[in-house]
Length: 599
Ligand code: ATP
Ligand code: MG
Image 1 (cartoon, rainbow, N blue to C red):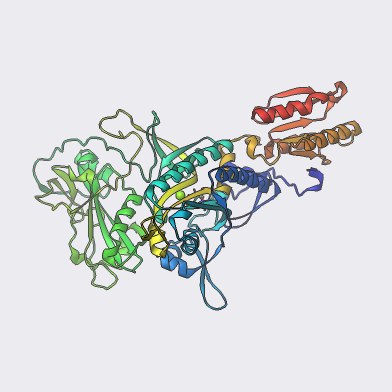
Image 2 (cartoon, protein in one colour):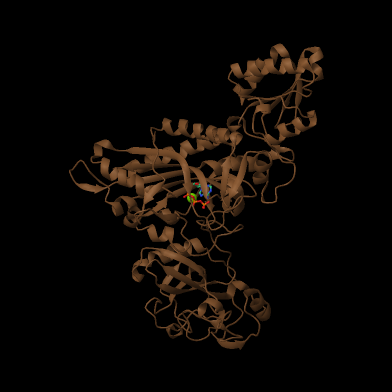
């Protein structure tokens, strides 16, 4: 590729629109352009990187026996209504773009493809003899993210590889799930990434077991909790651990105590000179189910602990049938402002007790008539605890479950695990924390979609039963940017060789020097013939500009046809380390070929 003939524009200034390094670098180096919020154009260099990643994915997926296909991005609403996901995905915080066609039929732009693929399986898979089947595709997905940001990390249109497998039983699914675990590890290793696999929450996609693959980077949006011995790693959304041991409460008598201005745990503990581990804090959430019913959820948890809203959401999803619903539309902490919708008298915010009378709730068909009361495991064991009194400026001390307060029937685990926690009582391992970028996610879906859409097969005994499914995703465009987040220096990108858009850049320091030009052209042709992807920087620019650009765009090797030509040599600079050596023209091609064989 001759740079002088290409659309190649680099930017010196920091782009104001970018917050994290990889985003800044991709913009500055001319890999991407922002077209709208969460919408990016992949310019030629970027497209090559994406193609390289896609090729690695194809090779590893095909090796497992999966077949590539391409499914429609435009998806009829009926399929999503059948699976029960239309409302969750299009209303409230739903992330599916939906539209109507000229005949007023509703459609969605595919954020994921379980519904489409299950419909195909329903039509085409009839017998156990056809199983297992695994199809995958690589295409643009659409998600109307609430907070699109960080460039390709969280786009509204982005490239994903998604695959779906169909099985006669759980055992066969597990086999493919394990194959995918290995295939994904191969893919990320071949892409030159430092990554780890973690236990994950299955989220709105549903199903039982799931695992995420995280690229370790400080700018990652996810928190990973893991142990140093490598036996445990989980997304904080999923992680379980033991809370620190609670102190013994200094209050042995039950009493109502005045405690002005103590609406936070910190202020309260300061006022009573007690540990937050002897406090039961009570937090009120508003949940809206897809039946339109709003319910109030009172969660009681030990004062030093935080609530994991993903776990809370999972608990509330289990209660959906009680509200004629399948799932939740939204979940948020309730406050005085929103309470006007459902409360018929003022609540004592900051002083809530573990019991709230249902007569706080207005009578309305769309408001649940009773509070949902959850108590987290950490609060169950407390004795003589401090908690709110449902009265502004007052708390009670020395309270006990079964005496002053009834223990809520629903004991749950909604506590957020955190760094420093023990993972179990018989292991000395404590949790450590790291940031990660989720680049892949594998799920055991089970029969959730096959049941909803009626995708069945006939087993050996002649019975018709639902197909068992798995699904497996990789964020291709996110992965490309994650590679930059992990591989860069102050001068620019340092692509891992396997996914670099080109492997070598030949720089002519002075295009006015005909010898430099001639030799550079020869090198360019020879390397290209050997299959080494090479850029020739033949632009009429100063040498310094070209060197800066070469560093910025991150090509693994730079060959410079400069002064050393007098001795029949060229300079070869390795981007990753900055090491440079003079290599004679005769040996150049072989030396470079050897480098690539090693890498
Ligand atoms: P996240 O939790 O980051 O929103 P997700 O869990 O919703 O992602 P999946 O449904 O598991 O995403 O999608 C498979 C993969 O697609 C993810 O592992 C991620 O790498 C990628 N991905 C998801 N959403 C985006 C996005 N908005 N932009 C870029 N890549 C994405
Ligand atoms: Mg995911």
